[in-house]
Amino acid sequence: GAGAAAAQQPPRLPPVRTTDSTVNALPDVEGPRGYASLLRNRDFLKLFSAGVGSVLGGSIAQVCLVWLIFTATHSAIDIAYFGVVGTVAGVAFSLVGGTLVDRYDRRRLMILADFARAVATAGLLVVLLVSGFNLLAILLEEFVVSAFSVLFNPAEQSFLPALVTAESLPDANGLVRSSRNAAGFLGTSAGGL
Image 1 (cartoon, rainbow, N blue to C red):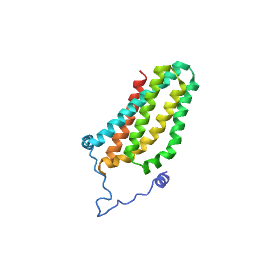
Image 2 (tube, rainbow, N blue to C red):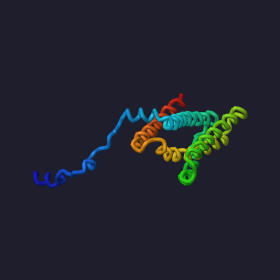
Image 3 (cartoon, one colour):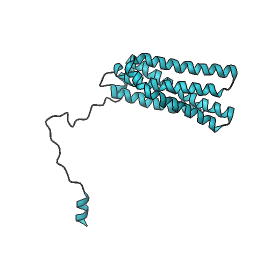
């Protein structure tokens, strides 16, 4: 009965009393004002908007390429190749991506990564327009885009603290991550149209 119920409850601990008011204090959260100040930061806004645009475009392109492969080949295996190539490139380059980010200028690495992804995508567009469907060209583009995305992402994450104050960094990280997820969702949805 009552003795068994009392034995199952954890013991009550006395409240912690301290003279240092910072021990139990929660951090101040600026909320929307913090986001507004971030969006007034020109350097952060450039990185933020370029990243959102890149994720949006990349998500649309992913869906379109899968659709293109399927309509041209009607082969689930060819679509699987597309997925495997992207995953292999991501895993292979993730092994060296962090090291490169630590050793070289992060801003230049981000520019290089975006340039390589743009060249690969533009090259694929030219191949498709000139010679028609080419699975090998699509797989090569996916490999390059995935490989350089793995280089871009850690460079961006480690560059962010140089653009915002330490107090704004949690809000900046939250805004970047949530907006990228939203852009990925919207891009994938738009690509399906």
